[in-house]
Length: 215
Image 1 (cartoon, one colour):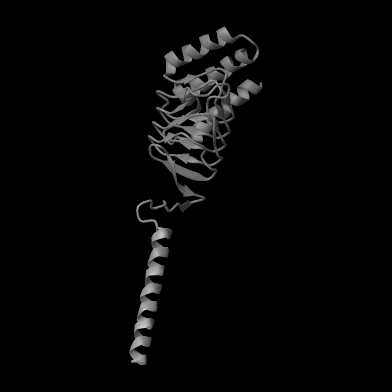
Image 2 (tube, helix red, strand yellow):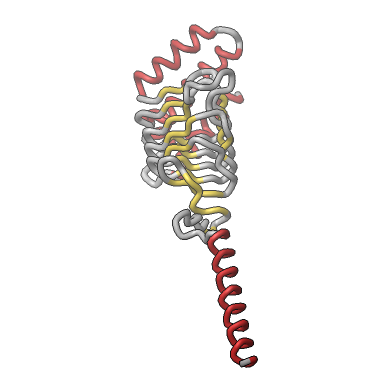
C-alpha cells in the first residue's frame, strides 16, 4: 500500500512540475524518470534486505531502459522528479531529500579521493539543472539552485544559487552576492605608506615655514 502511494505521489510531482504532462497514465508508463525511480525503489528494498545482486540486476535494467543510473544503495526522499533524465547518475552513498528536481546529464558522484561516504547529500526542494556535476561528500542546503553545467566541489549554503566551474555562489536568499575584486582590492600596506608620505610632506612644509619666519 505504501509503495502504491509512493508511485502515485511520484507521478503527481511530475504533473505539478511539467506542463507537458497530460495524464496520469502517460507519466506513469512513458516518463523515463518516473520509471527509473519506480525501479530504484524496488532495487533499494532488495538492497536493504541483503539481496544486493538482485538489486543491481534491477538497477542495471533500469539504466538500459531509461538511460538513468541510480545505485540501489542511494537514499532518495519523496517526490523526486527527474526531468528528461538521459545521462543522470546517482552514486551509492548519495542522499536526496524531498521535492528535488533533477534535469538530464546530472551526476551526483564522487571524486575518487574519499572512502565511506563518497557522494553528496542534497537537501529539500533543491533544483539541479542539466549537465551539472556535484562531486564529493558534502551538503547542498535546502532550496539551493545549481545552474546548468556547474561543477560543484564544496558545500552549497541553503537558499543560494551557484554557477560556473568550479561553482561559486552568486545569490543568497534572493540577493546577489558581490564578488571580491582580487585585482582592485585596497592594499593596506600601500595605504599606510601613502599616509606616512603625506605626514612627512606636511612636516617638511611646516619646518620650511619655521625657517623662513626665523630669518
